[in-house]
Amino acid sequence: MHKVSVSVPAVCTNLGPGYDVLGLALNLRNTVEMALRDDDQLAIQVRGEGADRLPEDFYNPAMMAAITLFQALERAPAGLTLSCANRIPLDVGLAARTALIVGGLVAANNLLGSPLGREALIALARRIGGEPEAVVAAMRGGLSVCSAGPGDLLYRTVDIEPLHVVLIIPDLPGYPQRLRDDLPQAVPLADAVHNLGRALLVVEALREGDFALLGRALADRLHEPYRTGDIPAYRQVVEAAREAGADGVALCGAGPALAAFAARDHAAIEQAMAAAFEQVGVTARTLIVAVDTQGVVINVVE
Image (cartoon, rainbow, N blue to C red; front, side, top):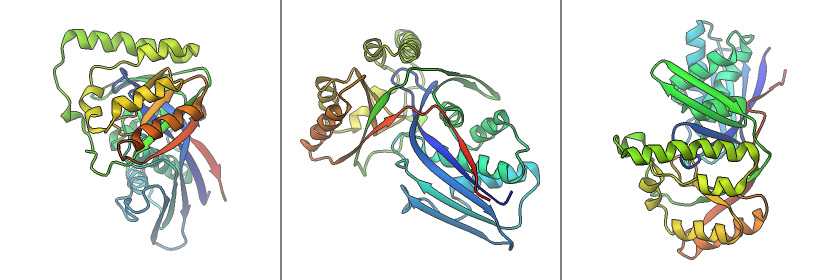
């Protein structure tokens, strides 16, 4: 095999109370194309989202992932061409970098004849820096439920009812890039119990397609209260979404993207949320996307 194309979905992690546990794959994709060269050169090109910010050198996430795999297997090719065509907005909470890491690993693995299975690739992606719940959802599609600890990862992919999600991505250049360390490291027992129960109900609501239950279950006490304060008019945007027909709204990852869940009226919800941001002078992009059930898609180009 000389050339392979790998498509990887975006992932909305956390889903309200499912902090570091839940990941929902969305049909918005980055594509990593990798090819062997006849010389010893490395050529990297980035197009689409993040083209002005992602490096076109060894530090590109997809290339770093590929090099990590080659080193682990001690089978590095002489030359390589890498092309990233990105549709997932960068650093807004939709796991764009994780998609590139997964894409780079899967492409490199396929160029070598697929010596590593999916479990090994998931473990390697996690080691490189991908969030486990995002890695699993990106690899397998659908809803991932993860429990991760040092050297240990338990996960399952849950079959859920088909649905569309309204994404809104406010243009907030000053939005802080959030890390786990910015959250309280000790929380009241009542808050932990609240999130435990609600996260289980989010899974059940998505599995059954119960939007009324989902709207109530999305309430979070562990991370959203500490992050949504940096999103102007957050409460007004959520209220506008609900008035337009949304059953619930959740922060995507650490934000600032938001996901609105509803059985219908997606266009009206999209317009209402954008208008609420516009009232405070914030421009925002909107998308209506389906939940992805495929995960990684591999195409052998040559």
